[in-house]
Amino acid sequence: MSEEAKTRKLVVPGERLPDEVELKEPYVVEVEGARVATVMGVLDLHGEKPSFIPLQTVYVPKPGDVVIGMIQSIGVMNWQVDINSPYVAVLNAQDFLGRPYNPLTDDLSQYLNIGDYVKAKVVAFDRSRSPILTVQDKGLGKITEGKIVEIQAAKIPRVIGKKRSMITMLQEELGCDIFAAVNGRIHIKCADSERESILVLAIKMIEREAHTVGLTARVQEYIQELKKVKGVE
Amino acid sequence: MAKATDVKLIDEFGRRHDGRLPEEMRPVSMRINVLDNADGSALVEFGRTRVLAAVYGPREPVQRFMILPDRALLRVRYHMAPFSTAERKSPAPSRREIELSKVIREAFEDIILVKYFPRTAIDIFIEVLQADGGTRTAAVTAASLALANAGIPMKALVAGIAVGKIEGVLVLDVDEVEDGVGEADMPVAAAPDIGKITLFQLNGVLTREEVEKGLDMALEAIKKLVELEKQTLVEEYVTTEEV
Image 1: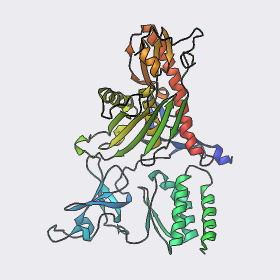
Image 2 (image 1 turned 60 degrees about the horizontal axis):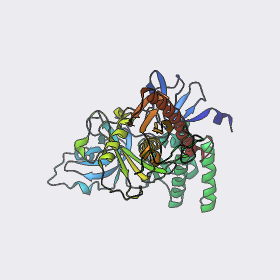
Image 3 (image 1 turned 90 degrees about the vertical axis):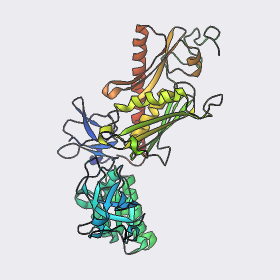
Image 4 (image 1 turned 180 degrees about the vertical axis):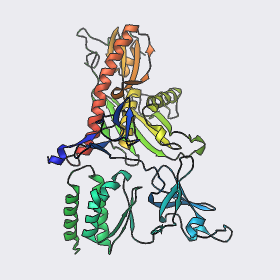
């Protein structure tokens, strides 16, 4: 066991955490004056302050989050968008088209149909109403090329890595464009399908082994091996 | 049904009909991640009693009128499979199953952090596959594991066990035979990590002292069961790689 591994510990719901661990509701809460983990997670004693990394989270939208949503149904004036969360988001037609919209003359399914993916920003969510999305910003809108990989939202920080180490390594190894949205969906764009499939396998490996130590190096090794097998330069 | 007088359930050595001592549990086994479609699932066995639990959510409830504006809606369905008993059980929910669904739901209402997920629903489905006494406490144990497996934030893990009284002796983890002819049955569920009892029922007659002693026996056993739950959850992750 490496030095780093010794300072990490698997924690189960209900386990007491050191008092220095930051409150991270609802995953670290205070129960009768003590810090308690409420889901499975890793207690990291490495570094200045102990921290708790939940292994499972539920994506709750926050204004400002850039998410990848899938059109779930089409309304009269808007689309209902599945954002991998218990809350279904709404994308208004006027916002998407950038102009006034008349339901009598325009057909929404022409622009975005059920099953299409959009990259959008959450503008409002106050828990009493559904989250509202917007595509009026740089880089947002319908996703027309590449693939979407869905993983658990809790594992997204691991796909990005400390100081973007993991995502940079993935980009350098395979030369793909990768966008990891906070809601657990990753948009990938590669030069060919071989690279794409290697990247999907690597992302799935990160999801599976997110709680382990030395993962970036192992994923890199795995990618290099797959590249040799598939004959990708 | 046999009467208490014509069946001897405790022999001269103080052992029960299956060879257990009064304070001994049946062999317990726990597994999680047994269903792919559920967000979390668990299969728990107490001897011959076998219970499956599946957890879904938090998710948007299909019946929108059920939405609660300030917290998640917790729904529990306890159901006995038609093949779970010696004689076929009608698959329609019985009065007993509706009651047990309610008491199991109440066992988790103060444990699951529902206030963080307003307007959503958390569903717990419990299916008794084989019934041999103690199904409600096995159901609570399975539901607790399935909830943890689904990643639903909860204050602590919960487990349950029943204490019974047969021939004047308090016994732990009563099975079907003992439940049928015994004098009392007291199911208890608790979250030892936060020191809370979340389910407490009593069927039959016990003295005040017996209730106190029985409760101590149950809580002691629940501590062991929660430890086993923790071990089961941790093992699921450790099998992949060292932490």
